[in-house]
Length: 182
Image (cartoon, rainbow, N blue to C red; front, side, top):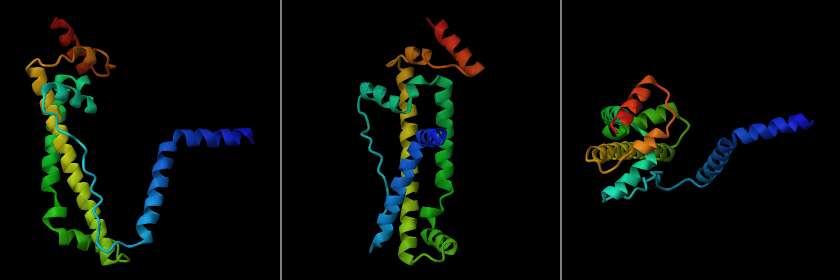
C-alpha cells in the first residue's frame, strides 16, 4: 500500500505542471462554455515587451532568449531559420488571406458548432497567428541586435560562452577559436 501511494506521489511530482495546465484549461473551458459571448472575443496575448532603446538595455534584453550563450555561427543559423519560418508563415496564410475559407473549414470539421462558436474559434486562431508573427519578429530583432553588439564590440560574451556545456565538435572548434583570440 505504501509503494502504491509513493508511485502516485512520484507521478504527480513528475507531471505537476501538466496537471496545473489541465486544471486551468478545464476551468477556463467551463467558464467559456457557461455563458456564450454575444460577440467573439479574441484571446490575443500581446507580447509584453518594451523595446530597449540603449545598447546597455539591449545587452540585457537579449539574455531573455539566452542569446548571450550562443556562438556567432549559432546566432546566424537561428536568424536564417527564424526568417525562413516567418516568410513561410506569412506565405501559408489562409487565416488572414481568406477568413471565410477558414471559417468554412472550421464549420465543416465541427458541424455541431454554432456560428458564434465558429467565429470565436476563428478569432482564437487569428490571435494565435498574430502572436506567432509578433514573437518571430521579436526574436529576429533580438538576434540581429546581439550580432550588432558583438560586431561593434559593445559586449563581450566570452565569459558567458565559456560556461556552457559543449556537445558538438563545431562548438569545441568555436570555443578553441574564442580562447585563441586572447
